[in-house]
Amino acid sequence: MRIFLDANILFSAAKSDGAVRRLFELLLEARHECSVDRDVVEEGRRNLTAKAHGGEAALAALPERVTDALVTDDRTHFGRYYGKTLGRVAIHSPRSLAEKLRI
Image 1: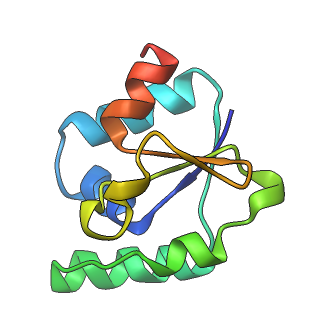
Image 2 (image 1 turned 45 degrees about the horizontal axis):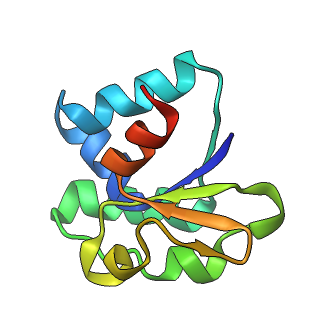
């Protein structure tokens, strides 16, 4: 599966050795194709420094043709889309993605 990672997922995986980091490791071990874009990397860097986030722009910038899913923990901007497919992209929280992939 091709999965686009939102900045808050990168932030969570980098800041602590918790569930999101483990999900990221499992995705890579299972050879899922995880991707980000330059804006997400920059936002992740800002978040690691400022300890703040707001990834709504990720949906607009999402490369639909090369992505099957967006994984984000940003409930404020994306929570209403969890479990739904917009265009051809499924929107998931880390938990719902883990459940869908059974990892």
